[in-house]
Image (cartoon, rainbow, N blue to C red):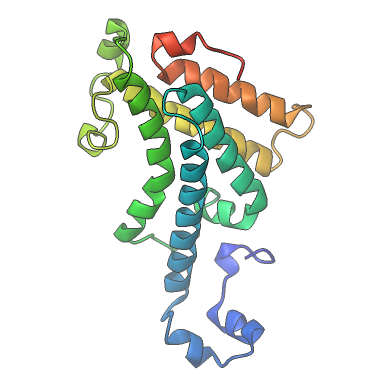
Amino acid sequence: MAEKGAPGLSLREVAREMGVVSSALYRYFPTRDDLLTALIVDAYNDLGEFAERAALRVPREEPRRRLHAAASAIRKWAKSNPNEYALLYGSPVPGYEAPQFTVEPAARVALVLGSIVADAWQQSNSEANDDDESTMKGLLETRNLDGAMPGVPESVRTLSLMVWSQIFGCISFELFGHYKGSVRNANRFFGIVVDEAANLVLPPSESLRRGV
């Protein structure tokens, strides 16, 4: 994948690199798509576990620090595993459609954010802004979020999806070179992005705690 990208992945070439006959590899992966799926599931689980461990190192009572820890872990994993990150969040592989069972491992990293936001709101006496609730009502498939973010206002759930897109977008821009010539200090820039993201999804009392 590093040499030719995911679309150029070939079972025969993989077998040749391994020094085995292609028929031996076909016993485990009948098609290229089966091999891609295995790689995708493995990468999702690795990323999810990496983010989970980072979030668990910070007390639940410090959601802003937890969010920074998880986001930084995702960025670190992406920079250490650029080919795997590109497979998950880069350009789609032509003709490939991920099976339904990849949804669960894919959701692990998203659930890290969901749990941080949910814990923060459950520990807070804050209420969502009525105008935000009215504006964002009905935008999301709430049944998929009830279990992941129980008790979290719908507007905050919507903002959480925006924030997740923002964090991953920032990582993708950096990893794929779109910040060259514009961002001088990527570490500091990313920290500010996450801090502003935290202000959107954490309860008002937590949003006052800046400068992590």
